[in-house]
Image 1 (tube, rainbow, N blue to C red):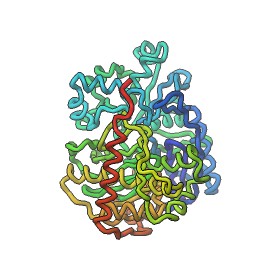
Image 2: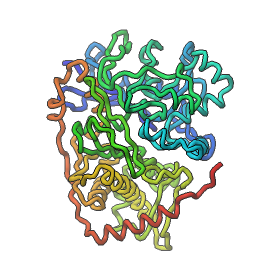
Image 3: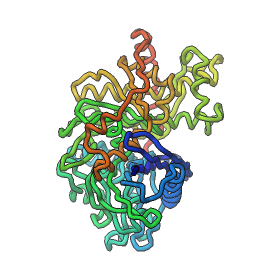
Image 4: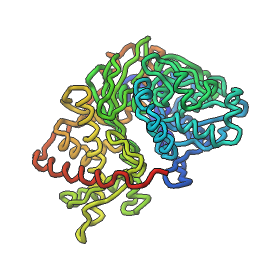
Length: 495
């Protein structure tokens, strides 16, 4: 029996997961890699280390599944999206550290572009807001600051890519430089309506087209990877959040999911219609397959599950992420404590690059348990802000929310999310929906799964969390949260 393997390259770790035809996990492997913080507000990765960990877990997952490369029907790739790599085409080596999506060094550049009256032009063509989150300004920074990079880029000697492009380049031995529309739509350089790189936006950001990858469908065989001497089709590529939307079987307009990973990412499928946001959300390509493009509205929370890592690594009040739920559950409520985890600024719907993390409401009676509970609640409350904006844009009221990601295993968080949203929160049996979505996109391309109906039949509910908190209590919590967010904004001055 053949299998599909998904490479899930995230912000803090690289994973590989082997799936069978029922969508069940047969084996998995994961390896963390370094987070590099050279200056306040800067976040970098070593792209070579990303490749080393990703190729390592590919082999580990196959070994744990007891399979060989000949048993793989296809490879699906899903990655952290806006992280920016620039490398030498001849040597295949990065010319600088990768600039991570959380990095804020280009916030002043975005300020200048907005001051020049260019925000509407970028929004109309790319569906994005002008923010340091996206790849285009990061690429411009590299071209401006790496000695000789711009001249070499103009000569076609350098290649730019988000992490998907980097992995495909390495998997194919440098034969293929490509990306898919879901990742291209996160660069500030791609016209999501025409489905092509935009020459005018490239000119504004001073990015030569010679560095850009070829754009291929999200589902379709685009290359082959050499795995232990066997050529395995690469059949699916998608940004992590779009892959999760696909893996959650949100294949039709009106279905939504929230992924609780390093950040939180709430996506609503809008079908073949690119809905422009009036509430500071993003309009993005969900995927392309069989000649059709589907779009989504997206709200991005920069710090979701990463706030738990901060409790562990920054404060040391827990030794492992698993300890946060029992610690937070040891108190009946947050004790008036609110934590705004704006460590990398605030994402949707605020888009404040100059906000910073803050804790409010501390008293002598406040404890580590209250802080842990406030951290968990901050994840759900940020998601609530996004969902409120999303419902205004789409003109609908959701009847439920599908959830996934590592933090979705936290029952306290899921119950609190249902309480503040006032709608059921539905957790599937397979939480690895990001990797599963990439596997489905790849498997559909090679006929491993026949059609969407077969894929949807694999989706099964693990648990539904019904809202239980009185609305008066929800209103009180939300009032305190709104006050805390307002006081965390514009904390640092523009550089």
